[in-house]
Length: 337
Ligand code: AVJ
Image: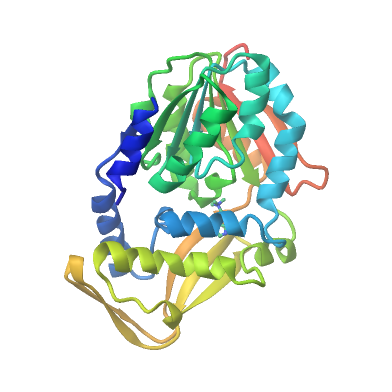
């Protein structure tokens, strides 16, 4: 799914690059499973082809979508404190995307003189590929070891830290995509990547009035709707399917019990979609939907409890004044910190 020549160009300028070849197979398996289940679903990581990554960056510019701006403001405020707390030589960024916001974390570490190595990890090859040249320019001499892979599956490859101590960053509220059981599993798999002086920095959107949250996922300009439908374009291209994007409506709802946004594509009519590469015909009733994303909103106690169950302690909690958005610093329980 990646243009190998462009990635080779990055390697030519000294960037280490590890692409994982299983992406197509994983997409095929997820589509087969998700669209033959009831209710139907698709995992959100497949939004992010080149177009999807662009649309996501455009979402971040929408007036209704507050999380990116809130996180940026918060990091601007606390970046220095984090750099003082964790004098990281290596930053691993999970879900780095186009790394537009990475300098908010990397700048203070670079200024402190500790940063040597940056390991961006993302499923989107184009996003990583676009990000790297600007980073090399901003941080001359920084070692970049870019990983184009699904970090939900490939964490084991990150075990060795070459420039300790290490800060693993999981920003942008990507953690919101994760169900409670998966969150537990994720933290348990991150824990062995952390030594006693290392830390995990998590950005998370917080529970608040749904009148603020819902419009963030249903912007007036329709960018989120286009982003949502883009997953169908990805399936069309990669698996030779014939989804008609306009035959599905973008739908957003707040699930109060589970404290999460749910995003769906709702079939406007009864229809049959062919997915040639899978030899599959998918039948939709009129009004039947595909759950394409959940975006959980968090409370401090939820983060703290999940962390504790994975052997991690909440070392610092930062939130903005009205508690719309938060950032947690977690470190191995029992380490001096
Ligand atoms: C990238 C998962 C943090 O949940 O807010 C934004 C994705 N989806 N608008 C989020 C998203 C629709 C976003 N995360």
